Amino acid sequence: MSQGSRSTPRIVNKKARFNFEILEKVEAGIALTGSEVKSLRAGQASLDEAFAVIRNREIFLRQCNISPYPQAGYAQHEPTRERKLLMKRREIGKWQDKVTLRGLTLIPLVLYFNDRGLVKVQIGLARGKTHGDKRSDMKKRDHQREMERAMRRGR
Image 1: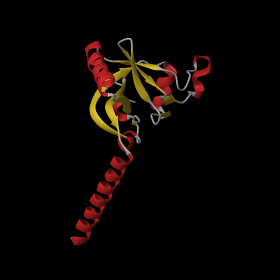
Image 2: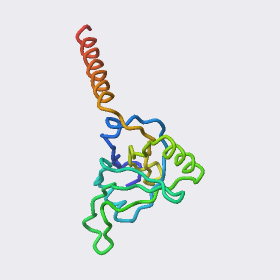
Image 3: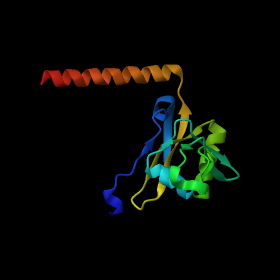
Image 4: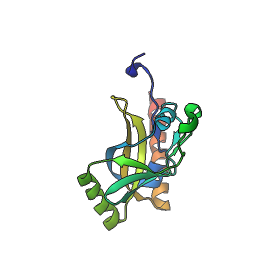
């Protein structure tokens, strides 16, 4: 069975776009163990509480929950361990300036397998939304739904 015929899961952080305003995005690799990759292929992960930190010119993903793989045996991984993200140092430096100077946050948006079968993480540079921002977004979304319904009824 070829790699392309199999459906690979995309783990999406559903809360990210609701709680944060995404300013920029970048794709990064992630250093994983074998049992973590197997768990991801089975779709057993969550990015809901996850965030990224920059330390010593390296970037790490924290609180990303990848469930233990049952068949791993002695080679089991810790579900919420800190995982290193693979990015160029120049890119990390640019993002570190933005995080420290502007008080922004690094949030993982999507965890997926690329065409070559490698695990990638889409990281977003984000600013937290206020309660009012969230309310206005919900109003816009409801208004858009109503317009679409009216358009369908009008046909």
